[in-house]
Image (cartoon, rainbow, N blue to C red; front, side, top):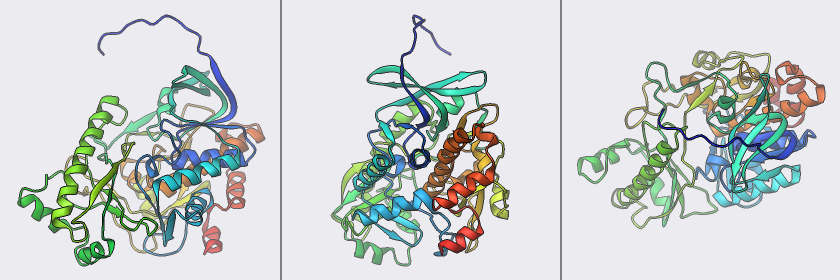
Length: 446
């Protein structure tokens, strides 16, 4: 540690007192806040950016999947996450297709704010969760930092949906980072959007070329493309903006998402890569000859950082075996998607399942050890590095958030810690709200 400077002792003002404080407004935090408010709790959601949606909006990732099991149209995600998809389509800002929804970024922001207002969720933007209020091993709120200075919000339950387990780590919850051995994390991506695209011609160009690996190799061999990436991770298109495409392609390794300097460096590099790739697209991709950069994302896309160690640690073996859990609160179905931690392309640990793959996720993976009154939702739940490759995608993060928010409110109503909430009471509540928690729910939804 470098030099330190003493600060004068101070008493931090309490800005608010609520039943449930949700830290982070991405898919997990948004869904947690909606679920808690609909269950009757007084809810405050604090978010570091100026909108709800996290990576789906501020992060520029205008494509959310999977709502279905792998390779089929059998839906395995319901509740708040699927409501988001349906409502953005009904509002005219997106399109639900099979197991995904593609949408306009600002249209999704508007829809999520409408849903929050309807549920009675209070929002506080431009606000960072800056620590945990802890006494006797129990979390009683969080410290926040914004233009009003440093303040505290007291809460009977806290949901950490920061993605990086910021509140859990500050509260002393055990956690892990990256893969075993070297602690390397999956690379970060800065999403960007382009306009001036002839999508029909792009689709013709892609036919038979998959992720265009040979096109990128040709561009690199000619000296027109830097070798930071070797395959297309996603072009996301919605018919409501037919000449625009969201691009999942930039690739920045060695990023510690809990370090401000690293996040800054990665953001600058991601933006540089985005401009670089527009020139490559113009020269090498049919239908993109006249494309131009519309925007780069405000929020860096982080695939991996801290993961709590919870009452259950969900492993890749659990996923592959489709292990059943008595306290299952939702389903996952995505392949084990691990981007290369140290170079371009995909990691050898990536695993693609057979058609029909789906697996349950237990409530106990959201309960950190050694800390009371705190639930964790989103990509920082208790999973292994490999299992995270599947559980980190947005429908699953949102479904976990809904379960966390519901559990926070129900445990208050029952007068018990979240860890003591009967699993079946939570599952019954989620079922009644349209969530899918078991095979019967899948059958009913399809």
